[in-house]
Image (tube, rainbow, N blue to C red; front, side):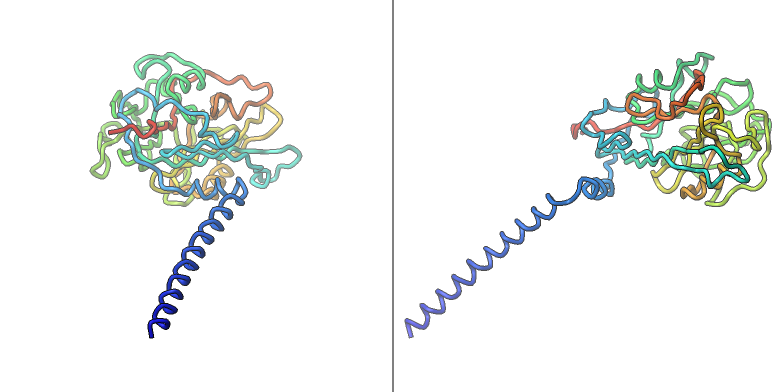
Length: 328
């Protein structure tokens, strides 16, 4: 009887040892499988990680200093608070009835952990007419990625609301306005007149507003009737730039190259279709032509041959809120 109990106890110990060995073996296989992933696969997994919300102050200071380790490659930046990826895309198929030259666009996909990371800035201040190149303004503010704005002082009329500060309302019912609220959500406003807008929208504070326009895509659909104005050039193959919201804290910035170099831009209707195809729920047109600028990792990405990029009075940009995990 005692021998049988001892045998049973011995068998139990052996079973336990085998189970432990299997657990460690499985863990080792898991580690091996992760190590064996291609770098592209690891990047794809990491890009789906939830982002940390660390609000930046709503003022004219910039983001946290950028760290070189977060540049995954020449087109991608990712830290725990922001993801930016840039894709150069052939858009020749969008050209209606025109062939013989290439056409290309840049699609910048941006996800942020907090709405405060979508920011605006002036070359000097929003009360002066000073202009600077986009890179000069962006570097001052530690921008992860930056773009030209709506050339805020190009004319006296318009609507200026930046980083929670109201500057002027001289709307004449001739421009579409984009309001961006404290949650980072876009609110397109069709041809508002003076006094029709306020510092809140749907019960939320307005943080920024643009007044170049027009609205290109609304509720995921192309806006059919668009009021033309001198800067728009709807029937011309043109360098264009749009800021789009695709979902909560998810944005795309889409810009085309200019016909003044070796490639063509798009007509306005073609550009609208591109924005819609890229998943824009709302797409809003900003200043184009020689102002069109994408700045990332110390370089003007859309640097084109023989294009005289103009200085601008304002930019919008996306900032990092990663402080190394030292936020209280």
